[in-house]
Image (tube, rainbow, N blue to C red; front, side):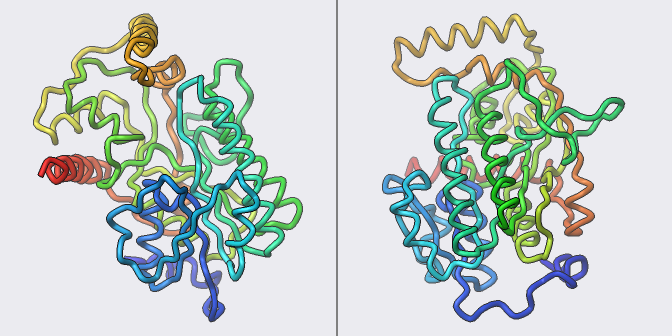
Amino acid sequence: MYAVKYLFLRPYINEHPKKNEMILVTGATGFLGSELVRQLTGEGKKVRAVKRKTSAIPSILTANTLIEWVIADINDLATLEDIFEDITQVYHCAALVSFNPKDKAKLLKVNIEGTSNIANLCVEYNARMLHVSSVAALGEPKKGKTLITEDDYWEYDAKVHSYAISKYEGEMEVWRSIAEGLNAVIVNPSVIIGRNAGFEGSGAIFKLVKDGLSFYTAGATGIVDVEDVAKCMILLMDSDVSDERFTISAENYHYKQFFSEIAQNFGVKAPAKEASPWMLGVAWRAAKVASLFTGKPAALTSDAARSSLNISLYSNEKIINSTGITFKPLHQSIQETCAGLTTNKDEAAE
């Protein structure tokens, strides 16, 4: 499965890791973090996995003797310093993902201050860092170009959502530390899907379609399987590539196509009506009013509505050329995700 690692990155791989090498993974109970830990331990590597007090250990990681679980908060330096002993590599996956404007302060604290703490400690303990950013931290394509690349830098826009601001500023903290001597590489994944997504994050899209979503938007974005993101991260970490960032995206899908394939796999009717901007405006306002009565977060926010209309197409040329990875076809990822969500729901009902 990892034959490409040796074909493309052989000159850069450390063939003689330290005997007491320990890998630190923040956000280890999350969707991407747990898949990363699964792959790392599958290679026989020891992992110190960071979790919060309230986080449950995913079923794919239980009874794994290569994992040392530690409770820590990336915004609490007192709990972080002790866990960096003997650490040689740090995968920083912990982040808050939200398109709710009410979460702005929390987004900035976790995604910027928390990342700064991890980067500073990596410098102090001489640990190599792989930071998980997002395509939200990339800019628009250069004039005359269609695809967004790693060289397209983000520019502030008053209408941009707080999540994008937090991921961009968090990435800037890593670049600051690189200037101070940090050995690091940055990845910018697009929308991540996979069989263990659950019904949160990207899994919420699958649930909406399964429950009978009637509308689609004219937007488009990049999508990638979680297994491929983790593979790319490991390949980059084990190489000598540094001071660079890589977009990780398998294919670009319009939302109409994405929703249609999800519906087909669930055996339900595909969304057939295009939602215009004014309709989305009515929808997010109605969702906001409804949330006042239910006390639950709005199902659709203004930021999410605006993002769904954007056509953002990403180039994966750099990551393919650097690692030789062959991405899993998205139709297969969508099929596996739908099957996984159906299985998880059935198991929960038993």
